[in-house]
Image (cartoon, rainbow, N blue to C red; front, side, top):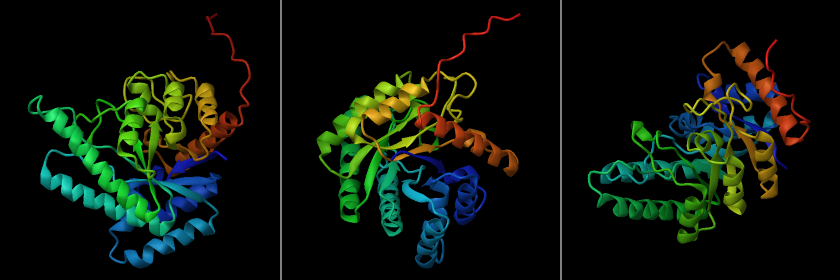
Length: 297
């Protein structure tokens, strides 16, 4: 069953424990553990006690937590040997944390940039990325966790570099080449919009490899991370949901919407209640005929 889900970093300033309590109070049935909260838990001086206690808090408030975002700032395919090694070790620690919490899926940026010193760097970079993901996939298999490779954009990357932006077919091809059952795809709708994709078609191409979602809207001018049907939306959200159901996806319909932050908590709470209602309408396919465009008085 596809459940509306909220990424915990909507309340990034508070502890992960307080964030999940607040999200549960809004009424969301599921969460993605946001990368900032994952780091708080992983790097806590008393992590061995805090991590299972956090898991118990999630269970106590009745939330389903099947998805987490692996540390965002890593570049597992960096051309810098030292950074690449350090960042892969960070991901390995994240995988262990997910396994401890019983989280089945970690969203992972495939890493790498398209800004090379020379054209000769491109094939070497692709090889490095394949090697990195292969190594991490083996660790994920051993831990009983899956890694969902996320589509990026040409204007997003660790430290502001231009990130590799594989399309849905490119992600499928990479996963097929590696051949690990621990790998799948995250479709980030906001990134897809910026790349000019047909979002529903990208979901259909991801198909049986779709194991995670990042749901966000924008008007095409930037990665604004808004709730669906925000002003200027270019997405047929009804068709997106149909595509998700067609490929038999049964994970969280997870909203990643930092564009709705930086306002009083009471206003964020109200925005999330609206977001949950929109998700319920969409997932229930309760949308009827649309009004004709208004032509003015």
